[in-house]
Length: 278
Ligand code: NAD
Image (cartoon, rainbow, N blue to C red):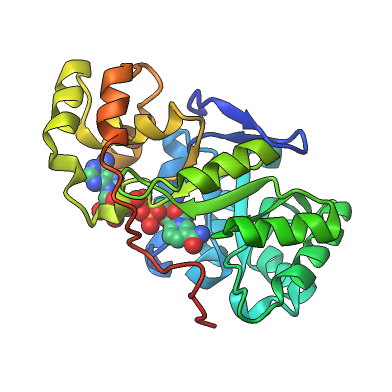
């Protein structure tokens, strides 16, 4: 199976992450092995899952069946909220389900600042990284104050922060802070989860027509052109190919600025400052 030629981003610990992958949030366990297998066949080498997606086992089956050498794959999973006080055990369970001895990136899924347990979890992730069973460690949905706390207390800067980010919600202050700290941005919901009118906006359609691309490709290109890591979710084979075919054109400054101007500051997912679901 031939890998797609996807650019990599160097993380602050020296590891390299493919800038584009497949996210499997809300991919049914019964469908996950097929979707991940099709993605690997299409040349994807980066898969983003999480314990709470309940499909780590199926991701692992597709990886095993592919026969692709482990070093050619980049696998991310995440520590769920209820597991922040038992990170070593939860991590071992994730590895077991994935059928892997190591993940490439392990993330704390939500800060849950109201419970005050993320710092302890971060200390455990540092030990997990030192053990070699996670090459890189990072966080997800962390605000500036959440990042500042774990950095101040441990001196270890997360390799990545995976946050909701799309043209309607660009998180400029947070991304600026992450840039200064050397924290890579992973944009979740890069297509606004299919819940917006972005794909039918005139500026997006005009850019798509100008470059012979689809509106979704224009939005995904807008992300990668700003150095972000994305893993748009799809269960359709045609869209797997479409979403990865974004590295042979460039949006102009005017086209980029038109999409930048869509910012309204509203999140589609939960607010990380108040999300207390366990
Ligand atoms: P997304 O923005 O990737 O949107 C997915 C939806 O976009 C699909 O269901 C489909 O309806 C549509 N779509 C996909 N390709 C398309 C195409 N070519 N043309 C038109 N429509 C298309 O949203 P997402 O799945 O929420 O985010 C991507 C990944 O980010 C997830 O699968 C998951 O791995 C991760 N994520 C992380 C968190 C977190 O808290 N860390 C939260 C949500 C998602």
